[in-house]
Amino acid sequence: MAKKEKRVLSIFFEGLKIYCLNIHKFLLYMLFPVLGQLLGIWLVFGITYWYTSNIQDLSTKFPALNEPTSMIFCVLLAIIPGLIIFMRAFWDYLVAYGALNSMTEGYLNTGRVYDFKSHNEVVLNKTFSFIALWFLFGLFTLLATIPIFWILGFIFFVYFILIFQVFTFENGLSPIGYFRRSLVIIKGNFARTFLLMTILVILTYYLLTSGLTVVFDYLNWTHSLSKGLENWVLTLPIEPLEPLGITPSKISIMIIQNIIMFVAVGFTLPLRSICWTLWYNNLNDVVPEEISKPLKKKSTKKTSKKLPKNFKIEKREIDPEIIRRARLEDDEY
Image 1 (cartoon, one colour):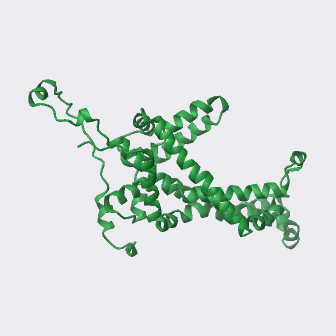
Image 2 (tube, rainbow, N blue to C red; image 1 turned 90 degrees about the vertical axis):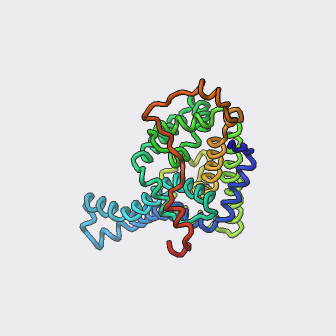
């Protein structure tokens, strides 16, 4: 039976509803991937700044630090913990692009968001393909930043918007196949896909970021945090930029504003993934009316084609183990 195609706004509000009803779980899931990256970066640059600021005192107490090799070794040793935290959080953030799609499908089947580990495994079971997919997407993004490719890159970005949904739900495709499949699904629906993307970008990248910025300004956090960054910014070679009006104060405020945007965008990744999963289902499950009508018996005999022996249609289903765990209490995980 054919499914009725949904409007863009219906998809958006349905996704927003799922996100809001389970916001505490999604925020918990994104806590380390988002804040872990900030913590790792802070440790790397903070420890490096502290070490360079106190190098004279340290070299006096420990003469061995006067040797360049010893100095470099100590710096590397000091930043390793921050790098490990950042890399792990960054990897978890990338995994979330696939796991959140599985969570959405699980919610649509069971009405619950549960068992983060099992949804992560949906991605980790295809780690090589996932890494290759991100590599190709990164290469595409890099090419799209070249001015002469801006328009073409933007157009293909819309066509490739569902690559992570295709990766999560469809098996037997190569990394390049994920891009092709997304293009096929979006084909004929470019304008509506662009509309949904515009709504999500305005909400998460602009409105929520602006709202969070107002909160930071009201609590005086922006000023306090930027003041703490100014001493570090002063160690950077920014003298050539000062004639342009770029001061340490402005740079530090700009860094805080980017951190605010990163937090807003990071914690709303579940919302975007939910909406794109719903959009994927909407476009992928709709059957044209003329195809959904049963054919006459006589006509079927004449027009039916014999399929090859190795022909196989893979049915997209959620892992039964995930559904079983949904019936258990959240406290068990």
